Length: 147
Image (cartoon, rainbow, N blue to C red; front, side, top):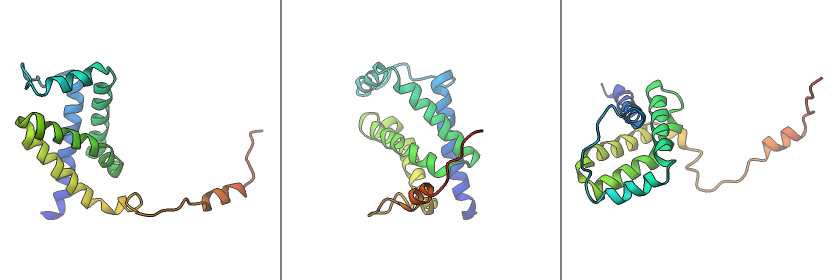
């Protein structure tokens, strides 16, 4: 059973982001009539930007779909990480009613990050140098021109 846990968690996180991302465009899950007062200024500021919510919901939808289809999972996890941090901050600080879902998302993303840790080795390298081998190889090549 434990070997299927990454699949189940990946599917749940993918479904959550896919459904709530689509909901941003089609509104099939109604929002509460009166949002918590502490959230109103924050949400008003984000809505005033105009571009933020469409970009956020598109990102959630695409990343959710990537997780559901098992395509580019490490990339989807990296892109979703700051979104989950913001969801957690909003619900832990401004609106505790969603704290359980936020806690689940934080734990699920941390778990998936651990399960896929092999793919993050390159970005988690403390000291790096540019790789000039690719540049030197390409400079030795003869350019191809269209005839």
